Image (cartoon, rainbow, N blue to C red; front, side, top):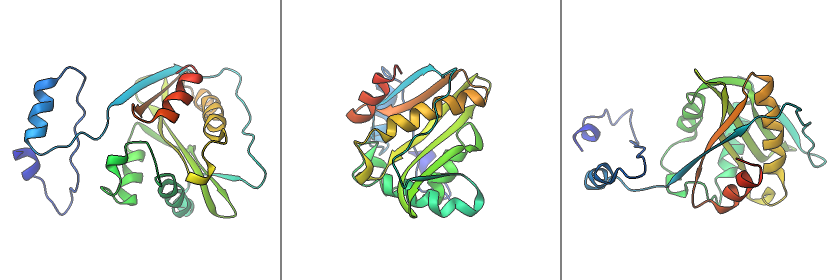
Length: 195
């Protein structure tokens, strides 16, 4: 509680903690200090693909990689993917989009070519953000999300299959990710892909 109270509230709007399973005393202390449990994360990994797959998308969907002049498209794609999300819904509305993107960029080693936004005539379809993991032969799925109208069409699988090849091309032999245990569609997808 003292650590939270001591923050510069003009700069810090959210304080989070990651607690390993079995750390009951720490969990109880956080609750007593005013923290709420947002999600139980499952960490998963698998080998990247030696034979990369091409990105085959439905007609009309275009992809772009990250660059400063495309930030607005990435913002729109990320925000669209939050509508009716099952991925850590307790976080919705706690951070602004600038902070969200800065947080994703700061996770591992940011490589703009590993960030992909999908759109159809400038309308958001989805986004896949991969970063390299420092001091490890791995890439991380920092974020993967689809706009509500594009879910259930195998686009998540298509993006991940392509991402496994992208990670390999950037020197990663492993792909890692963290997923909200309650996000059943994502858990089903990752397990079906041998994560």
